[in-house]
Amino acid sequence: NDLLGESFSPNALNDAVSNVASALKPSYDKIRDKVKEAKVKQSDETGWPVNGSSWWLWAVITASYVFVWIDEFRSSKVLEKIFGVAEDFVGVLVSDCFSAYYPFKVVSQKCWLHLLRKAKFEAKKTPKKDISKLYEYLHEMYNSMMEFLKRKPDKSQRIWQAVLYKQKLERICNIKWRSEQAINLVKR
Image (cartoon, rainbow, N blue to C red; front, side, top):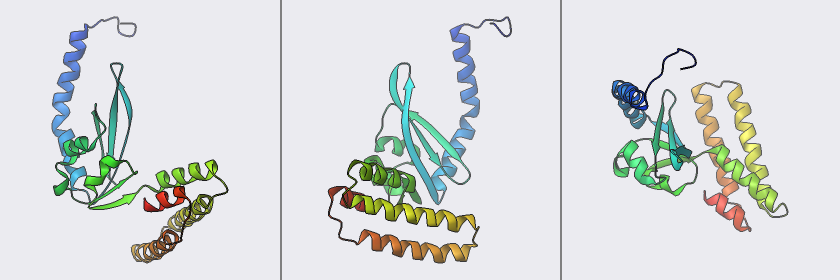
């Protein structure tokens, strides 16, 4: 009303939002299909208030698309709404360690930043335990990967380096960690 000198009833605004949502639904559904078909997708969820209640905003991201879903639940049932049943899931799912993702991980990858954040948190909490050394190893490896990628290597260089990094990560995981924090993080 302040900007245009016009006022709209709540019903008129609701109808306008509904009409726009209906017009965009085919495009929204196409984006969901593209995300479902993608070889690699990353997903995360965060709290989202809806009319004073706590809901969840789920984001699924590929190299080309971002799909957003808002739901009142934070469970694998939401992922079924997005991807379909877990048995039909296609591709690699990059995520944190939230248990709702487990049924959809035929092939999975943990998010490096979530892993580093958890390792750093545990290392600060108990700095004298071996978790501090694990954090140091992971942090160094992450920095090394970022430096490697800054050089814009070609595909064959990336594949070769991925093999080397996988071996290094396996060596780190195979160390006889003693603290519960380090053991749990290695299991991730």
